[in-house]
Length: 356
View 1 (cartoon, rainbow, N blue to C red):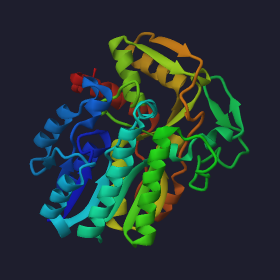
View 2: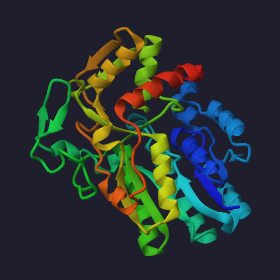
View 3: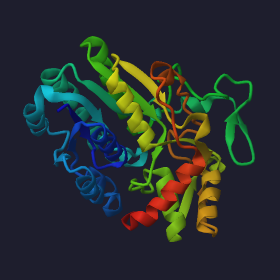
View 4: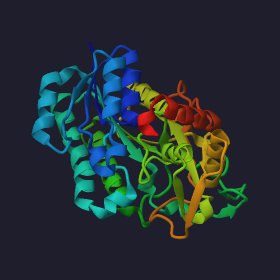
């Protein structure tokens, strides 16, 4: 049976990936040592999701392996070897603010861990597809240089700007801008993944996503925008907006749609590819628009505080142009609009009270 190796298997994207590939007949091997609990405390832990995966996917095999530990990771590759057809790398330290507090750990997870996986793939299963979950933060704050117009609830490009209709494409520069430590480390790994594709001829891809969401997200203040916002709304907790009048726009993609993009790539992989991926024009919202959507579902006003200082490297407006990926893989399209996303995240908190 064909084998898929998923890192960060118990997280939001990893768990959706496990389900998508299991449902399509793959033997899925997961690697996840619950570093999210180390990053964000008990509310960030994904142990509950690991148990759900074991119930839902009986053939799922889980290894509590740290991707920074080359020798331990090598034992997994030695066990499954050439049967591995795809490596889906979703494990990461995902927070700007956390990275600035501990850049050594951030680098070791996001860069060294990725390099370990690339090299082990090259040694033990060089024909496998290698999928890297990158981020739109590799563009740093370059998107903030766009000529943006302030509306009632959001910033957006002038209607005649090339990005206004479809979003930001892969031609945007990654240089000469402020990235944050997190963005810089994710960019380093992104370039490594590209280089293993171009230099060694491996089947690698970087998916540069905006906000990723879904009901199985253990959202926290430092990471997991929509889920954390809805958790605050449901629980009556205060929510803090950081800068830009709350009119900064987030692109949102459901983790299932992202996992389906991974599957499409693995069916017909290319070498050294890069794609912006997200909800695109059909699934984006500003922070204040998201607050209003949460309030409608909860039937009450949220306790919202405002801090004038924005997060370093934060985007004022980001919408992903997904046309290049859809040109290469026309069978894929995002299936969630914002209303469906909000509904599912809200309903998910009732199904998984551990997240509330």
